[in-house]
Image 1: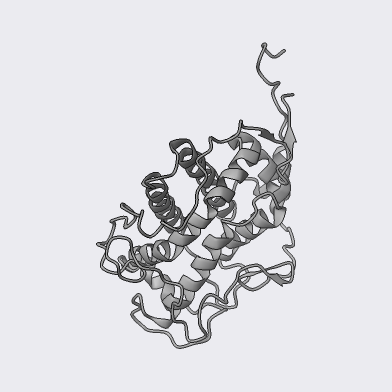
Image 2: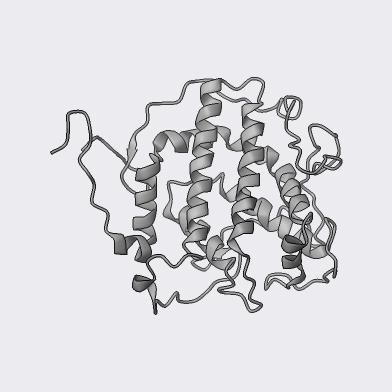
Length: 291
């Protein structure tokens, strides 16, 4: 018997968490209170977030190339890249420019519509591909580096949003919280491919046809048109601190977004307070009242 003002305990079928992505996402949405207000916060901040993507990508790859244990992954040929490869990769190596293209497209995907199940299906596929499944040249990235990379992305985006000079504090908080929930669900969709929890339910599951990177259900879901065919970065924007493209000149480990007002001057962000939270009852983010 529940006490007044509290919801009754919900039943979660453990098997469904490991055999149904929709059930897993529904549970995570409910547990994290990921709701319509989070979707609205992401939509209101999407132009701001997208403007930061080129600099975020360069920070991430600068970090990955700082350590031999993470840089060595780029010596393995990706199935989607058939161009020349440098034995000792740097930020201008062909394989790194190619990977930057996909990270930019992936971060833009995070600014799309999380009310659609396809959004979460693709995030799940991203987790799968980092274990080597679906690649003719298997590449297994150890989870410690995955978690650290996601933390860097969250760190720099959080500082950028919170340092915005005109955005209302309540809207900043709403965007940061919504982004954090998406990133942590992405983190879960990585770990589900690495950990052994629930494998008594998944042993022998046929994952069907494995599609190439950037595709889902036979259609392209990542836009590669943002980069020229020679691999050059045509979308890099000037770093708010150095004034150079792609965050050049920024010391490793330093976020370049403080004082970002000049580069964000053309963005008209609404300063309204976020709407009251509504409980999510399904991956499509349909609203429901208290039970």
